[in-house]
Image 1 (cartoon, rainbow, N blue to C red):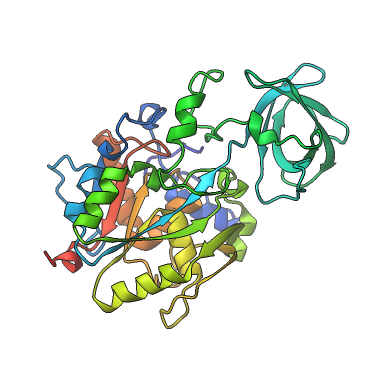
Image 2: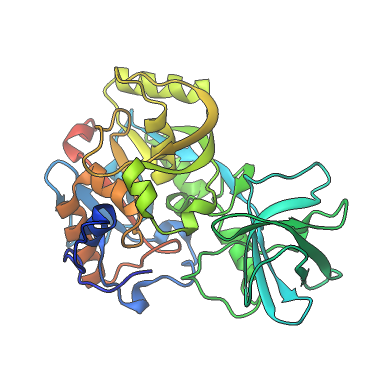
Length: 382
């Protein structure tokens, strides 16, 4: 994480050979360590809610302590909330090399495997060079040690690990928390397995949570429905690219790591009904936004289907065709997620909002607070 420059400053020098990466300096900021949420709050929907008027770029109700539980009050009957029902895999393995050094592996859902779970693509962290034949032993309380061997080395730090036949290594896995959430051993594993998962998660396949959805409870969903606010679903399996910084290639080509998605016919039909009646399409998170905008045709129609998307939404790109409002967490500097939100609301508006959020003690990143970016005038249908 780069925290080398004040929010909104350039933070670095433009080079003739890397204009794309230099552009990211405009999305860099300093975040005090104590603003990075290390644990989830006890009640999901009590997370704070920063309200940003998309039409003016200004904060709404700054003197009001809004919470995610208040979401039904800020949306309106006829709006549609769209959520990502991906389920996070217990994909983080902890153990050691056969020679004794500590090792950590992140099993990747989009890599080659077989029905016996014997071979998995993975990101491995350990001292020394990764090479074929390197052996590991992964451990989990209550289970016998799990051996694994590197059988192939790929680019960008990925390897193929081979495990004993008929054993699923996910049975030894922990929640794949991002590196800025620090844990000592496995003390908090039980809590993280529950809380680093949305309550509506169903489709296994992600290695990171769609974090805006972590704030929802059954009670909040019920209150949204009682207010006449609809709900629709899609799937985007967050992949390994979410752990990697943006590089020059992604910025030059305008494409990100590919992630698997499924957009049902029923969701497209619900969105079309909502738009016909003047309601707003409210995307819960950047993952939901990415799927909807990936499947949007130039005329604004939406195509159901499944596959992969490598869409990179950033300032200066094409206009948003489907999403009218966005519920999102506070994101890392210089990240594709921050660029997506800036594309939706405007760079100055987002950086200004982040300055206020830091000043007012909002909690950042996966277990942190939320922001609703919307046009309140469009929702005045009470």
